[in-house]
Image 1 (tube, helix red, strand yellow):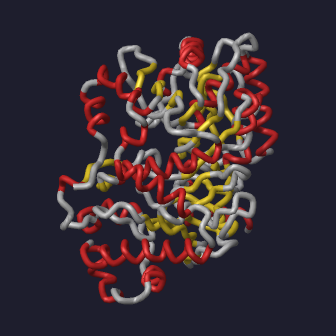
Image 2 (cartoon, helix red, strand yellow; image 1 turned 90 degrees about the vertical axis):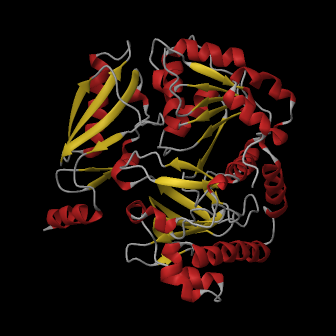
Image 3 (cartoon, rainbow, N blue to C red; image 1 turned 135 degrees about the vertical axis):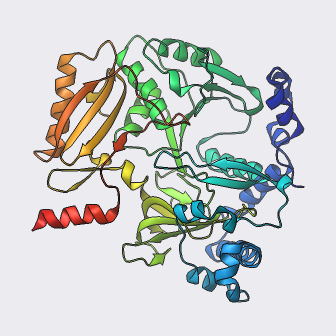
Length: 471
């Protein structure tokens, strides 16, 4: 059986008080042997020549496809006849699969020969619909950590450095944070970041002395806005900011880096484990790990390509989940393939840019039928200072409600400036209405949902609206 998590880690999960002596054990040994092997693999392969790295990726793809076409019902039934061909030619003949297809027949995507002792159950966040139930290979926990540490190391992170973490934890009973020495971090609840609690958050961060802030950009932005709005409050000294699991909007990077005086490092990944891509030492473009999976893009006409210049929906094939392999999985996210290597860092990794989250979380529809990207609104500019949280809510074309949880400094003048800034960006196409509220719910994992879109969400409906507007 693959070693999923070290004995020390399991002990901590059952008895948190035992976690403190764990710091005496070097981090690589807390996580396990698979983690150590993959760290070594990534160090060895990341600067390989393009031809050598492409050949290695083809080997990994061939192994994943051969097993899926032999043992996973969905792929065996449809594509088993392709076994024996080259991996790339097989991949080209496999139709991309959507989340809804897997949800409708989940057993069709599970390898029945894998023992239940070798997997655990997880799910997607479900912020854009019904969560997808996923079975993950137990060794995948250690593999994922190796990839994460590899990319974080590009901005100076080393195992054993401390993190203040803001990700999906709600401890209840008024508890704002919890120590997690197994992973050298303090977990802070993103659910309780009110103006009343934020001074305690910042004081705890400063006393803990983390090397990095780690978490959702939305949570770290709340901290930054609070510090900006309270000039007497000094930010903690940090080596860097590690931001993932949410889109990074225009203005956020500038706000966070200027507030904390540290480099922000962002990456793109998902619970389905098909694509993992992070920035490098010199660039904010995402570098997709070829050792993790194959990254492709499906264009508007339906063609799937990994060639530079391709734009459309990101499609991924993961290598490291043998129990429930996703092959040509449609992520629901969009991006552009900007190149096959980075000249600045020397890695021969696919470069993807303009990555945007799922469509229905990203677009407002104007009165004319025009699609208005949230990225165009710069929702983290100075107009939003003084707010604890905010959310856009659209039920009809051309009208958007801005729901806000105001801080003590958010007065009528600031409210007027906010609405005026939004009106300038959308001209006469959107009516903006401000609605004050005492709370705005986060997703079950603590992520901010910036847009609640209750219009029709399919591309066909939007396209029809746009066509109608042009007539």
